Length: 347
Image (cartoon, rainbow, N blue to C red):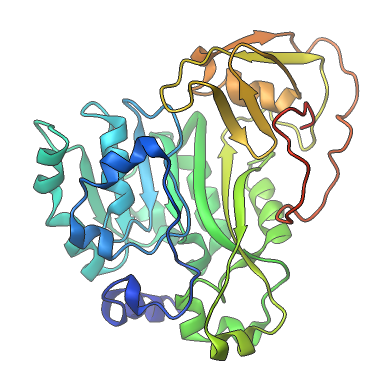
């Protein structure tokens, strides 16, 4: 199947117009990214097959690893955000995609006004990151955009991400998930696999897998239902539903498996240029600047022990435990119609 995926993205697809479904489709970027995206080379953008946006806040000077970087669209966008003193490393297995990415290094260096390029591209498999020249604990952030579903060994990928992240580092990635386990017969269909559907994990299997690899409290940032818009493929898929979802996983050893209440709170200082009015940690934590926001112990640690610490004031410690936050049970995370969580203290 890995060979099929290489051929699909290297030879069959010449641009997003060749895709047979809407799974790998772009989404509208926030205003602060639009000027940077407008500077990217047309060829790099035309061979972009992501399903989300992997550009979190506070990236200046950081080292980022992009798994399955393809033609380099996200690498070059992130290179502008980390600045000349940061670095972005892209890994991909497809020669044709890497050729596109590499030939536009100087173009983007000049477009962003850098004296030296702050990107590099490595050929390799994301299931074999240990075979590449990548330092353990060497990255602040690992990103991936609609690629983990294509992997033939997702557990290995997530385990290697944990190993490569610095303490307090973050795995911030978008991918496709299914509302149930994809039948085995469909997982052998090369077109469905290449279209990012047949290899999609059942969402609950992903959560168990992430926790089993040391990411105790995966946080869902955003999600949306995917349409296929291809009658022949829809017939094959039957009642399966698919979602594009962005998760953030923090490499913090002390995170607990549930949202525990220690009477803590945080106050966002409003100092992030990308989010001056409110900081969005995930779909249930939108923290208005200057407002006391009660949080669970895990959320407190995600902010206090990561690159976000300087942007918050912290109230409380772990000396007293009040039990679990109410309303934090297990459920399907992607359903629409949830109450607005922006003013809620529930984790």
